[in-house]
Length: 310
Image (cartoon, rainbow, N blue to C red; front, side):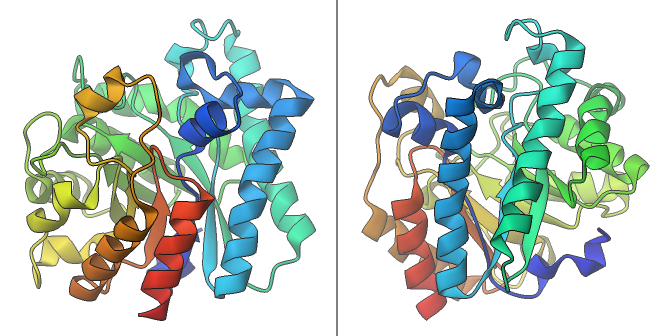
């Protein structure tokens, strides 16, 4: 789907919440290596995914918004096959199945509102720590395989979620361009509003746009609390206008603190919703709302009711 045709650029859209933390902590289903792709290996896991997404589909229907269904493929790029005990071919099949499940949900819903199926691609390494940073060319070559599988399976677009560094984001944008696919780039930031590499968000977006002729359809921020990044956004700045979506964490904790936790910090859904309302009031171009670690349907419902009422 061409970027100019993406409906989430023109009207409010919801997306889901913290899939992995919801499945692991709220539903009690183990996720080896935090990889939700493994749910597609069993009937129980597949049903859990269907139940999870169905809640957001009903919310979007009730709130009369569009919905982005993000595939359970955040940790399903080639390097993760061996740790998950899968052959490359088996991992490819699960990637295709993740898109197929969302297509089936959309078809069965016969929804009057638009539903976009997004092929989710996570960082090559850890979502909190950039680790070894690839050059853009290496990142493009690495991510191309999974991206092609997702696009060929029927994804309407690609989303690069929890990007920790600029070169990997550039590589993913170039991968999408090579495939002719729309792509959203979502950066994560630390409590100071900077990427884990120390780059300012404004510089990261500018660098990706400069290196790709502004190919990404839009940018997002995820896996951080609104208090971590709200002050980094500049009202009226051209780069800020490129930020169209937020998928925030429930917790105010840093990535390091979250990584060390053994219990889920669900935060305060009411406070989180109010912070989103304030954010959207200052930056009305932010039309895509969802959640990340620690959030579930309850948080996204509070956010939707607060922001859409405004």
